[in-house]
Length: 211
Ligand SMILES: Nc1ncnc2c1ncn2[C@@H]1O[C@H](COP(=O)(O)OP(=O)(O)OP(=O)(O)O)[C@@H](O)[C@H]1O
Ligand SMILES: [Mg+2]
Image 1 (cartoon, helix red, strand yellow):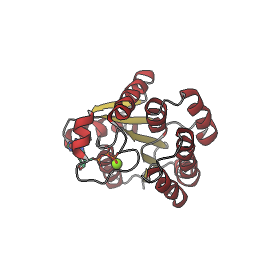
Image 2: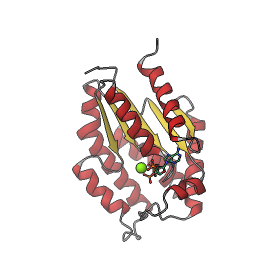
Image 3: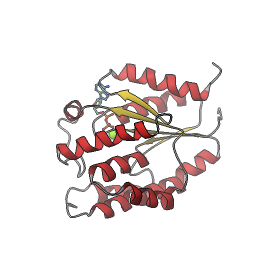
């Protein structure tokens, strides 16, 4: 198995933007190349975190307060990094995350209007200074993303109104603006194959800088 410097890559974007498609393709590409690589979805990725996911996404939980929601996301996330992500990084492996902290800033911060300062305080407790080496934002207009979710039963957050989703999308773009070096911003309207090419091109610049 090839080892590299530990590498943490997160994928972000609104529901239906095309994140999971891209992170699965990168996962298989790196696996084929012989890297030690792991892919986890958020919320989830451990037994406990998947139970928290069920609470978060259950449409019956329509009374959940924004702060409860934010704290549950960070509970799930802390369990995931403690149990899976940090041990893998310590072994020099690659970890791909289908959503991470930026989701909470975009959805609960910009979408629900919680103060970014309160989210960052909780983040400090829950994940310390862990930050992705690279974050891939698949930026897709709402109508395109919604068409891609046709026929799917929507979870509690997917069923939110268009204003919430628009604020979330704009929140993500603000994050790219704040930290341009950490992000690869992709136009989610491109084809799956073109997006894959752009993702691999960027990841290769980290894995094989001299190539
Ligand atoms: N670039 C693309 N062009 C056209 N269709 C796409 C593209 N990317 C993904 N899709 C299709 O759109 C649907 C949603 O994609 P995907 O599951 O990757 O989105 P997601 O961002 O992970 O959504 P969610 O947040 O709900 O998990 C899938 O059917 C997928 O095949
Ligand atoms: Mg997905």
